[in-house]
Length: 96
Ligand SMILES: [Zn+2]
Image (cartoon, rainbow, N blue to C red; front, side):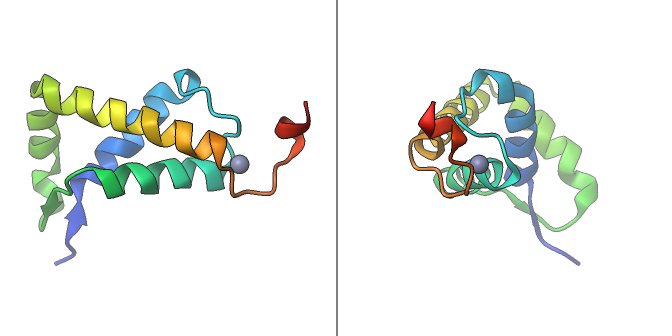
């Protein structure tokens, strides 16, 4: 049985949902992955064994407004860090 971190799915969704508001200096795959990784390092992981329980855990998070707000705020902080410390090779944004 694979063990998966439901938080990864939640953060991926939050990222996709708020992509336009994150004010990222670059939205390439590398930078988006960096935002995801930084966010996941800061958030409490939620591991589950069976993927079938995933919707339940997700529902418990959306019901918990404090938890959801914390996740969004962590994603925004991560986006700021990545925007200021880009590690991809897209340099054109910095020149302008
Ligand atoms: Zn980039």
